[in-house]
Image 1 (cartoon, rainbow, N blue to C red):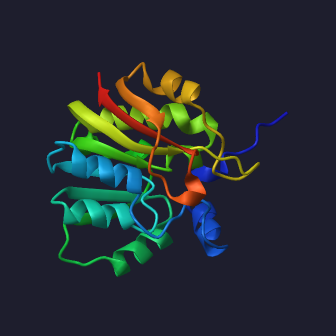
Image 2 (image 1 turned 180 degrees about the vertical axis):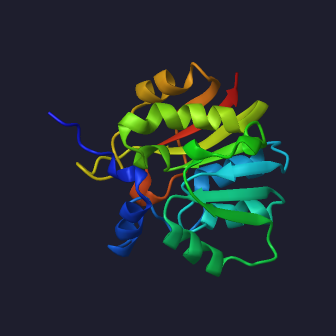
Length: 201
């Protein structure tokens, strides 16, 4: 039997997904657990990559804190929308595309990668490739941090995740410093977010 195609690799899927309405992970502000972490820990402003950036609340928040931001999304339409709502003076570069197809010159380029509901939107068959891509894009000692969203929408993203899966997927490539329930999620996502802070091995 032929295996079902991986629809989430296709930019057209994401354009249609956003056209159909607000994705279940979308909130109208930068992710509170992650922003609180950044504001209360000594993370220096640096070159940060935000895959699956959506409508761009996090890129804007990081740029306002002095970070140099590259924000990516498979949906070229949502990238256009995000760029329109962004102050053009902020240091954010938007790129439509897949981080698993990154240009060779970006390997080892980033100091940090910010995760915010990207991993949960990836077909589970593609998650190992995502983990390896993030590892390759980070410099030695670079960090991956943010929020992994735990939800289950059947045959459409976001797909389920677990703490055990996250640990198994990331531990070969990253030192896992923090992987725990987020404490200050918005009400609709309370108890459904894992806050993570990993460093590249």
